[in-house]
Image 1 (tube, rainbow, N blue to C red):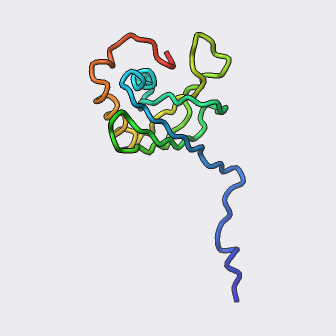
Image 2: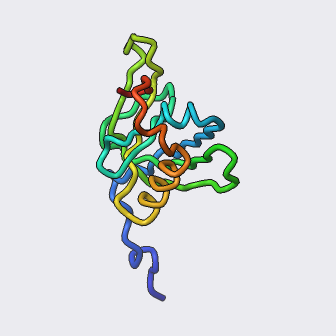
Image 3: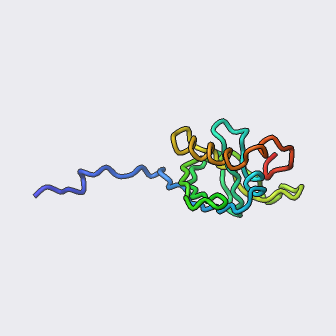
Length: 127
């Protein structure tokens, strides 16, 4: 009888599962503060006390305002605000949306919800 265990390739030792985070944004002002339109595909700031590095893979479940949909986002860390940041900036990470249909869909949805607020000069969590 053949040993089937050798037929399945082992996962590389360096393979790390992405962290899973959830973010619920209930107010338009909070969405404006968290949205990162300056990233090529768009992104969102996620407050967290956990330490991350640029490029870390993140799986984010995002809920926006009164929308009952939960948007799954497989993104990467593109911004890190450490706990020592100062200027009343919240500790957290910016998750860059993926360059695929899900990334385009969430970026369009956020920009639809924000509307003219996108042109505001109010301070955000990042810039």
